[in-house]
Length: 219
Image 1 (cartoon, rainbow, N blue to C red):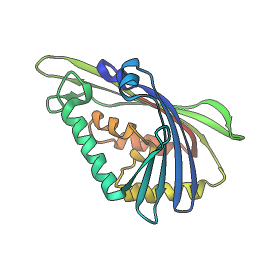
Image 2: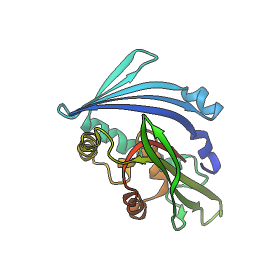
Image 3: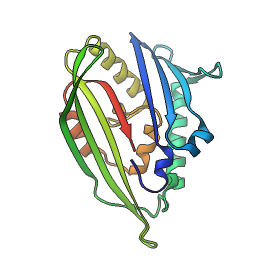
Image 4: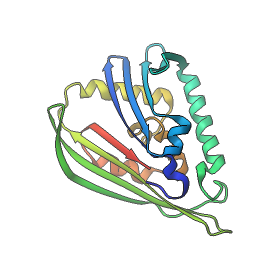
């Protein structure tokens, strides 16, 4: 969810990951909710292969039958450059990052909202909402934004220890923080628009026990 031009970035999609030891393959199908964004970027079928032992990632464009190879060092540099560019441009906000005055961050958590069996495993839905406003002190223009993450958590998931071990090693190799461990794909860049200091959100995430079988994020 988002005010101003943020709605242009809205998208829906599904990512399925397969993990074995120090190797992982994730396949994603993303669909842009905005017609304008869909015309510009298009809907995408992609896949990513990660090799921790080689420090490499292969990004596959399935529709175009193309792929690119990126080292972890190159990926870190690209991510930092993208986030810096997003911050400098304001990411479509009516105020510049430099002149933005952020309100206090409001974090709301709903536990055990719903229950569902995913892949035959019982899970419980938890929702975290983070609300924050950005105001230009001169023009008084304001953008109200909401970051929403829905997680279906389960206990005693087969392969959970292996999956957690892989993600922890990958996040460490990529230099990602505690919040980023719960977010993948385009959402990582969007987090930069909410300013810094996510300690409050990290604390609330740690209160939610279990392994995420399904995660949905909106901005």
